[in-house]
Image (cartoon, rainbow, N blue to C red; front, side, top):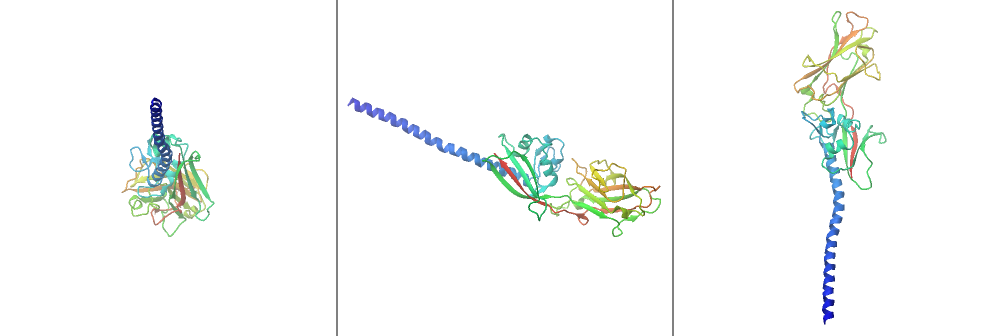
Length: 338
């Protein structure tokens, strides 16, 4: 009888230990599987959130007046990186933002991107790639921008179709339709001016893909067939460029000038006889206001003439009737996170 009692007790102890161990193992297995599964889900969620920020948000600089984080000189002044041209314009990317985002000499990988794009304390690794079609008819003609390492076998990802907005330009060729006035002898200096009416350019009814915003977009002016402005075969001398706001000249050094197809920007004064290409670049805290008219004046003299008297100059308007717009580039942006 005693042996039966001992055997029964041993059985109960062993069975109890088995049940406890079984319950413990059964409880651990779902948590282990859930941990593996949730890690994958988290990667996908982070990739999705990052893709949304890149394609639907214009980003934010420190002390913003409008979204121009790409113009900041210090990466620490960038609060959030976003590539959209403006809020509410999903998948329309700014060329200036794209170029600054993929500039690995300005931003430090991965720290600046984790701080201003992925957020959080977890040290995610990532790769962000933008593939653009340089020609709408040639599928193999592509350009690729990329930042980050190649992803491993297991990672979360998202792909978004985008278009990259190209800057507009004003093209003037020779003496067209009597739009320029001959100033006559003895009226130096002779000038050609381009006016940019901000209230017209920033019209909110214009599609953001084609809206001209001198605060964030480069302004490009090309005067071709320049010899048509001269009454003889002499060259002209570009003495200076005057940037003014509502007819008040201001200091604005952020521009480049190319003359006669040269590969490097010209230093003024400089002579030319075929073409003038001018680009005005946006700057942080730009002085343009909604009610302003910006004027860009090219101050000329003709070589060998004193006073300069034989240039035909005048004023042109940079607006939606006169500007030309290159086709926007289509692309795919892919975010991989692990």
